[in-house]
Image (cartoon, rainbow, N blue to C red; front, side):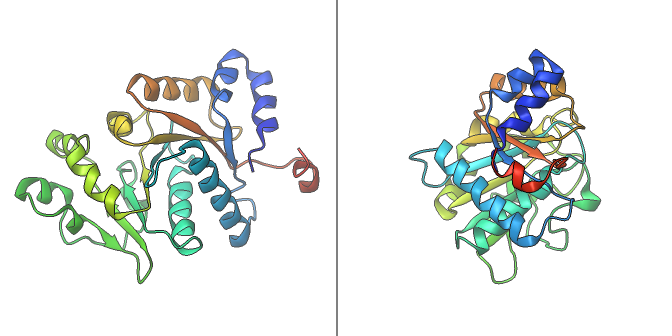
Length: 246
């Protein structure tokens, strides 16, 4: 975890744009998809949660947005695994807000169907809890905020208001927001000012640092607070025990 050496090494190779991104500390370095066991993944997620908590001292019910720059960076996987692990292993009440409308065919917990859609709740004024689904008998809940790729401005506007966030902050220990790629959809940057912090997801060896930097600047310009970076799908070219000493 927190292998800042890897990010610094990439920064030296790619110039000042990378260095500007690395100023946001790497708070997780995941090897997702490279034979990582469930136990290892859970340990990484617990460490990630601890890093987030350390970055938000005094915040009792943190809300954290995970945001990437393009598709297939693993943003949804990181958000889902963090929410699941904190719920099951740390026994916290967690809400995963699925805001990613970029790939509805691969959405998080696609089998869950809420009693009401967000559009219906906005139109009727009913309780926002009707948009949430409990995952089996766990303390994890999922809110698929948008069911279609096209949304109404009124629906997105509702997520920008305190009336949306205050009730769920009271109910949950942790709120995780899974967003679509910032270069494709404006949804994430539109509500960054309402969450306590933003974690950027950067895919190792794939995401261009110039693109990641532009997303970081967009978040800050929109009033968001960058907590750090998840350096995802990192490949280990030297033995793991050496990385563990870095």
